[in-house]
Every structure is written in C-alpha cells, then in structure tokens.
Length: 260
Length: 260
Image (cartoon, rainbow over the protein chains, first blue to last red):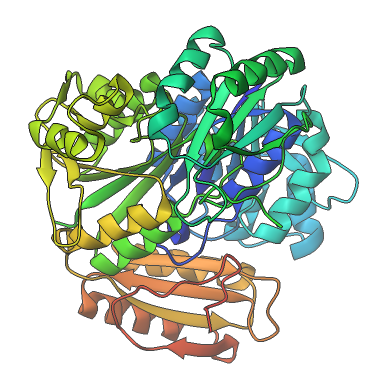
C-alpha cells in the first residue's frame, strides 16, 4: 500500500508573496522519486488555530505528514504549538533539546530561546548522520525548519526512510490539441481505471500541442495501458514517445516542456 | 474589512512534481499588491471528492476563492464537478458557453467537448475586455484554467474587482541572529497585537542575518509599531532600514534577499 503524504508549508511570508515557496516543488519531486503519493499541499499562516486545523485534517487523510517553517525562537514560530493544538496534546520540553539549547546558549537561556526545546507531548527525536539538531517526529508527522538550505539538508539526511516502490512513467507527445483525443482518453480510463493518465496542453511549443503522461507502480499494467492508448490515437498525431519505463522524477515546466 | 482569500491549485501534475506550480507565487504577490489577505493555498489532485471537500472548507473560511486548473475537455478535468459536489449543486450547461463551443467545434460537438459548457448550477459568466471566453464565477469563487499564460491573461483582465485598501510595509535588516531579539519581538507584539511582524533568518548573506518586516493596512499604526521596535533593538545591530511605507508588493527570495 503506497504511502499517502501531505505537506504543510507554514509561513505568512509565503502567503504574502514576500518569499517564494521552494519547499513544495522540491518535496513533490522528492516524494515522486521515492515512490510516495503526495496527495495535498497546504500553505498556512503562522497561527496556532489554522495550523491545528490543518494538522487534524491531514492526520485523518494521510500516512505521512511533513511540515516546514515556524520552528525558530521568535513570536511567529508557532508550528509546535499548532501541531500540539491540532492533536490535542500538551507542549512540553524535550530533555535532549534542552541540553542542546544550554550547550549553545548557556545554562540559563532567555525564555524565548527555551522554546527551541519544545515539542508536542509524545514526540520523539530522529537523529541522522550529519545533523546537529535532530528532527522532531510526532508518529507519522515530521517537523522541518523553513530556511531552505537547512530544510533540504535535514530532509535529505532522513529521506531514505520514506522509500516506497517506485512509480513508472511513459510520455506521448501529440501534434493535436486535447479536443480530438478527449473521448479516447475516457475510453482508456474506462478500461484501465487505475492508470494515472495526465493530459497537458501547451501553447508555446512548435513541435507538439499536448503531452500525455501515463503512470503506475505496476510496470506491466502501465505497459498494457500505454499500448492500448497508442493503438487508439491517430497515428499521425504522435510526434514522439518516451518509452523509458523508468522511475519518474523528471520535471516538466508548467507549460509541459521537459527540461534540457 | 479586508477580504480573506484562499487559492485552490488543482492538478496531479503539480503534486507529482512533473510541473512546477507557477500560480501560487504569482497570485500571492498579486493579492498582496491588491490589498487582499491570502489566508491559505491548497494544492489538490484531479478528484471530485478532494476538490469538493476543499471547496466546502474554503467556502466557510473565505470571502474570495480562486481555483486554477482542471477545466479542459479531458477526463482529468473535474474542477467544475468538484465545485458543484462541494457546494451541493448540480452540473448544468450554460447557454452562452454552449454557443461558444458550437461556434468553435460545430453544431454537434462530441460529448467530451460539450463538457466545456458545463458550470455549477447558479454560476454566472464574467466577461472582460480581451477575453474570448468569460470567467465562470460561483458567488465568491472564481474558476481559472491551469495553463499559465491563459490563467494570467484572465486574472489580469478581471483583477481590478479584487482591489482593496493596500498593505504598507517597512523592513529592518539586522547584523545579529534571531536569538538576541526574540524577546524584543514578543514585547512589540504585546504592545501592537495587530501588526504583522515577520522575522526571517538567512545564512547566506554577508551584510545581515535577519530581515524584520512590519506590515499593516493602517499607515499610522505601522509607523508607531516601527518606531517602538527600532527603539528597543540594539542600535548597532541595525544594518539598514527600508523606510518606504509604500504598498508592499516586492518579492524577497526564500532566504530573505530582496530582488535586484
């Protein structure tokens, strides 16, 4: 059973357009390469109520939740409080984090800094090679910082634990728009209801007008759906086929253009 | 009363990392410049149930909802059905859109194309100069396509109707980290609870280590909070102040670096 994941991006700076969200793009590609099924991304303000509500909802829907942002010492860092609120847990201090804070800031750190040792009750610490500060984990929920460099370093250090069976993908580039093929795609979906079939029009390419993507975790099912689709399509409309049933991780631009 | 907005980005291609989401960054900056308070962004799969649930939740929380994606003729275009499901409305055909479809595809378009005329019952069409196809509006919810060029053209054509009183912003660049100023920020928030005060650490700048942003729709309140904060900060830590209490729309990179 493929793990269903949800990402909660926490930060007023993203909602107000001051800072570009780098996390959701990075994580969506990482999760795909890991074989994790990302089901939802939610960008939230630095507010305990809003974070709590989103955590509660994600908890019901998902097997894996990642939060980014809101874990520093300042007033706008309320992610731990939000998670605790959403799960009906108390906020407590973790002795190992307390020791780390004292190591860095001295025996009696100011109260604002003492918050750096706070966790939702029952959370555990996940250590990994190369990490000075461990990752706070609340069962299936992983708490990451918002600063991109730090976030990526921490995610990369522990991501192997999320590894699942891979997705396989095939692409078909078409010289026609979506209109003449729409009913064909319905037919294929009726025959292969479990295939992930995407249709992406573009208006900026000379060579093709639509990219079709087929994906599945079962290589033979993908093969069969792909063959069925290719046979139904008008043959002169097919510009190119990417036949590599390799784990999918390549990024297309928003207009359907593959990189490079 | 400032309008509270929510964005629903619909598309498996974004969740699976194949296509980068260009919409939320664009819209967060546009809404900020318009004076609209963006409260949440949700990225959703092409599924009627998931879209319906998100629409229902957003409807309760927000005064303005924008959806992008999922409005073409193919099987994965289920945004209209999702909105209708979420609001407990039927899907019906709009005579004006039916006429447009017939104009383009002939008197008897295939059933897949007839879906291009579908709307949630009670929706209206919003026309604007330069738009060949009007925007579907369900009360406070606006339906936009996912192809970036088309989405932006349509949004720009109607965005003046979202115009609200502007946010004003001031920035302070600090040579120190967050630790020595965290308690000062709490004090300012206690005195000016309505100020939007952000604290953004960066580890990639030689000149400064933290950017503070203060924002408000009330210029005099911003002025007072800013003066209070500046007086409390260690003076030798202040590298630079951006004093322009101008409507805020400038983008910083995720590491707190302003552009240019």
